[in-house]
Image (cartoon, rainbow, N blue to C red; front, side, top):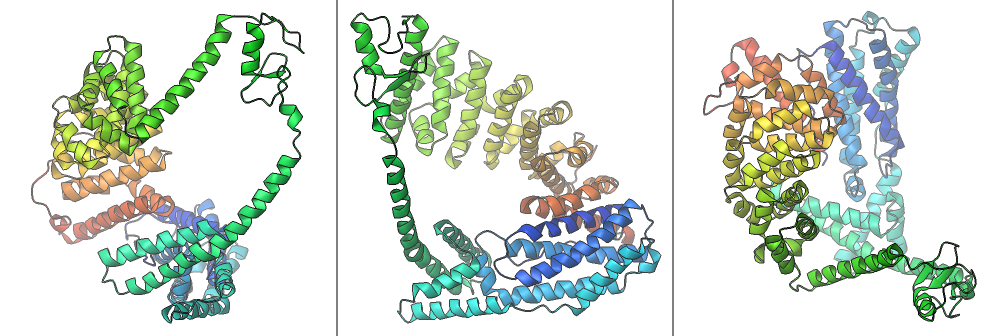
Amino acid sequence: MLKFPAVHPCEAISPETLLNSLINLSQNICNYQSKLFSTQRKNARQTIRQIGLLLLFFEETRDLRLALTDSVVLCFSELHHAFQKVQFLLEDCTREGAKLWILIKCQVVSTQFLALIRAIATALDVLPLGLIDVGVEVKELVELAGKQARNAKVEVDPEDERALQQVFSVLDHFEKGIEPDSSFIKRVLDHLEIRNWNDCNKEIKFLEEQIDFQYSGCDGREAPFLSSLLGLMNYCRGVIFETWNHRSNKSDARHSIEALSCINAEDFRCPISLELMTDPVTVSTGQTYDRSSIQRWLKAGNMTFQEAKVETSPGLSLQVVPAAAEEMKFLSRFLARRLVFGSSTILPLINLLSSSSEHHAQEIAISALLKLSKHTSGKKEIVESGGLKPILAVLQRGLSLEAKQMAAAIIFYLASVKAYRKLIGETPEVVPTLVELIKDGTTCGKKNGVVAIFGLLLHSGNHQRVISSGTIPLLMDIFSSSDNDELIADSLAVLAAIAESVDGTLAILQTSALSTIPRILRSSASTAAREYSVTVLLSLCKNGGSEAISILAKDHSLMSSLYLLLTDGSSYGSSKARGLIKLLHKFHEASSSGRIASVVPRERPVHVW
């Protein structure tokens, strides 16, 4: 929070890549215009407006395909660095649950806005605008943006300052054991646009995260004050919003009663029994009867309904469908009830799975176990009831491909429990069987096999088993043969997990990964696939050393993809892209000074094909 890990573009970056990344950054910043700023409204609006003016300049420069001199590229690099920090700052100001904390930090945030606007002004002052052949109007916009940046008055908004003092006053009341006036607190909440219980709960979750971070990653100096703020928001959630919700619920109840009073109860009487229907059934004419009345009517020998005069047909399908529906409802209630109360529900399914020689019965049993494995209690009962062995047997020798696929999915859910990953992985046939499913299964089967392996990789002891089973070449085949974005993203996630170890990196570098994965990064429409691609490449560079980095450094289109992910990706993807950009920058600097071997410390050689 309020950290700005921006990456300065390297000197070797192409002007086209830099300009496109600047445009993407500017567009992302301008998109914040529509977002809610509970504080820092004026500073944010002013900064976004200036960058919006520069966006027009960047777009015209790109559209005219103008050649950019080194001095222009240098200024654009400075702007890019400043824009990254602006985006981080705007993201923090609009972060869900951080409204109160941003208010507390209003002086720090205002200072950051001022520093960034001044940095933009400095870059525009030295920008050789005369060397860029754009229209006069566009040049005037750039000059206007520079003038506004130089003269900008960035300060704490008086309304924010007033709300901040009110927060300190409330905290002082609590410290003295005095309950503050609820209307006084409500003014602060209104200013921050914390309108309901859910908004307040988000603030609490955020403050809890910050307290945990203070104790785990910092010196904990801010933890006591954060705890005071947490106490304030807990008070608001339990007292202020509980009162409002109670009043709202009473209002809702009143409206519900009024709505019910408009309903005519006679419309819900069965035409046969003239009683209110508890199980209504609609026949082909549209007339509705109570099911029990229909049954009594038919047992009495009547073959037509009382009002509609429609002849009934005792067809088998009409009898089977309602009966099947009732059985399904009964079965679902039975399974759910048994699972909740801990009765032995799963054991009969496991016995059926073990003894069945008919593929339909096996599919039904494994399907039921799959549904139950999604629940914490279900996972535990499956393993404790001895269900792991028959499930693995179905995975290896299932009577149908569908049963094998569902067994793989169960392995994935069971592997979400730390203790079970080791237990499953130590069964010799599991990983090879999952690999076979990836090789021969349908798209669904491949996906289930891939995610099951991913779950097992969360235990480090399973890494070598996965590598030695030939998983990596199969994943590389998926990248070249499949057009399913989810399957490709899941496969990249597995590859990223494997690449975390030096042995995994060594195995991956024996394939065409260094050419295939950058291609996915450039072409994939899936954000997840692109982010996992960068994660794999970063691990390959860290563990593979200069030989791996040198191959990526020759790919001039890679930097453009990385900058695009840096501006458009999630916080996870941006951090991975930032890390890879830094490594590539360091390599370029080292190669120019003859210190390539020092780019990444290595403990063992890795030969790259």
